[in-house]
Length: 339
Length: 49
Image 1 (tube, rainbow over the protein chains, first blue to last red):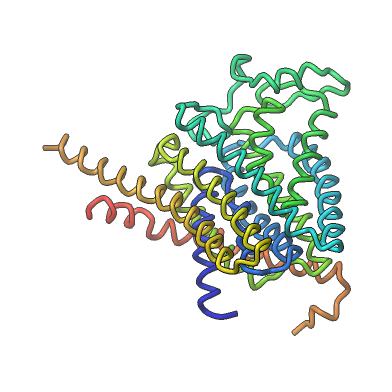
Image 2 (image 1 turned 135 degrees about the horizontal axis):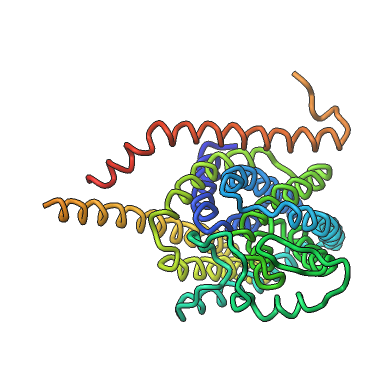
């Protein structure tokens, strides 16, 4: 591996770490498309993406454990459903790879999923909404107010198929509904090679009705296992490349500390619109690459990679810039009061 | 030095994941120590520039 490529991976990991540390999600979905754009085989792009997610989530979970934001019972149930989903998702990828269609179908799924979530988050941010699945860093681990439970979650909670489970925050939901949501998110996780945070965390909130802080902590706890199991399964098929994973992780671990520190300084709502635009940027990047492949336009691959890196750079740069500005403003106002 | 490629696939996969886990733990501890050592000074410096 060249020094330039090593620096690229460490730098890319740093950007992703800032996003992961700040938003509690939104890292891995950039890695797999970037590796696909760089010409790695689908199996390596997906497997290495999962291994990277595993390492990053270990670090993030260690922090969230101290905040008491993990529902272990829910986490274990999610692991059971997700494991089955990942295995099915992986089999689909391997089958599609044999047919020579894996790259295209994974890319198209990415475009629609990222694009859809990107439009939703951007719309909510511009509208001034506050419940789009992002992390409310100040929310307490309290009993859930019925008004705060999304309508879909209320419907799912109303299907009282025994056995019923009582989760933290007083949420009651059928075991089968939890397993169903876990399986569906696991399927996407195994298929797309992502830890599933940007799918599962909103799913825990919108579909099951778990309070956002617990959804984040439990999701991270679960990603440790889903990412670990997923990358283990891919590693057995030669899909994990340590020369990709190790430098990415070295960068993301540092970035995650910067992003976490920024959460106590910057208001997330200021950054949310950038996050939505970044998701859209990722979706456009994958679409551009696919169009380039179909029409044989090589330069589209480069355009796509620039879009992915640019999107991550834009948002992580906005986080860092806002933090620095907020710190300086705080220092100025302190000195003004002192005068 | 153990030749990992001579191990069965399950053991190879476990070794790969073990390496990633080990790196994560080392980075958590290492960067944590660095944050404690220079974090406050860095923030003060940013405030004063």
